[in-house]
Amino acid sequence: MSLRERRRRNSAINIVPMLDVLTTILLYCLVMMQFKQPSAALNIMLPEINTAGKNVLGESINVSVAQDGTFYFNGQKVTGEELESILGTLGKAAEKPPLVIRADEQTPLKNVTFLMDACRKTGFADFRLQSREGN
Image (cartoon, rainbow, N blue to C red):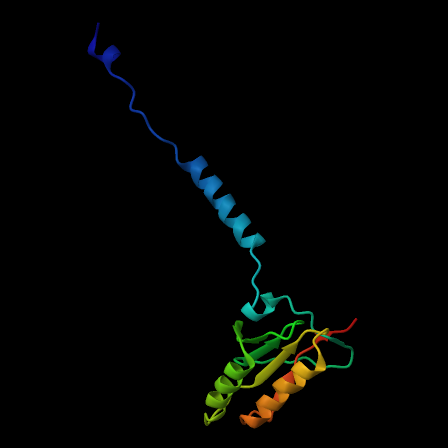
């Protein structure tokens, strides 16, 4: 037997198919991912207003009221007293970012008026009620 016959072939791993699969999985994940704001994930159905203009705000303070009357400050659940305390602290700032109130369309009016009253007490007289666009 010659030396050439005994030599084994060098084994090689072809990584191109593996890279193809990983690229496909990565693209699928990016396409299927939903990019939502944290407060949009609270399952709040905003009231529909047909005549409302578009609010384009950069950085803002978001206060939400769920259907059951639960308050959320920038996506975190808070009580009414905690919310008043937070707004009081933020109301003392020299430059206040815009305050946006997001209330579910089935929220009792007393919860929305409590929130509006708390905003005015703490120095946020200029706030906005967010709605969804009509058809």
